[in-house]
Length: 113
Length: 112
Image (tube, rainbow over all chains, first blue to last red):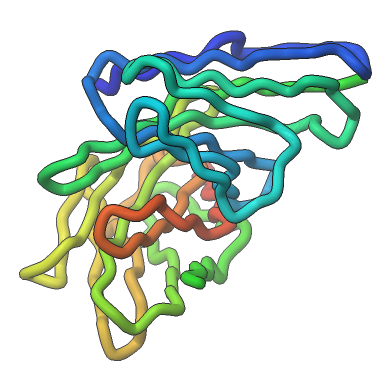
């Protein structure tokens, strides 16, 4: 069983609010990722990190930002939420040796009203 | 850029029927291939993966997949589905240790 946790599971918030989606893993993985998933669509990579103080933007342009101050923690922040940010956000981490399997959290379903 | 195609958006099967879900990827180099499953209300879980060696890979819960390099395919199969296999199935690929690229997913509904 993977040990990667996302909070909150569900969030409904008003337009213009600042939000932070939390993601933590206890597996000691250096690599962590944020994906955005809309219903019936593929997962799109929005941010990734290969270690502390390392962050990169993914394939899908996103107004969100991330930080990686500790290995186990990879929060995602939206400074000013908009209805277009309504989506499911999935956090993942992967092994850095061996078979590089990715493990996923349960996701945060964000609704901006 | 790498892309993944899953041809079936929604598959409906009766229990005990055989399953095959298609997956094709775009890159012709050395790739790693994965199938993930997402049961209702749960997180994505790894079903099986291929890195090298035997192109027929066996995973959990009786699933298997076959890597056919000449067809850029990695189709998922199960001889006899159960109601509990109802879920969303995602094919994914990466090169080396790059981030995974996912297909759009196939929703499987198994009816009694």
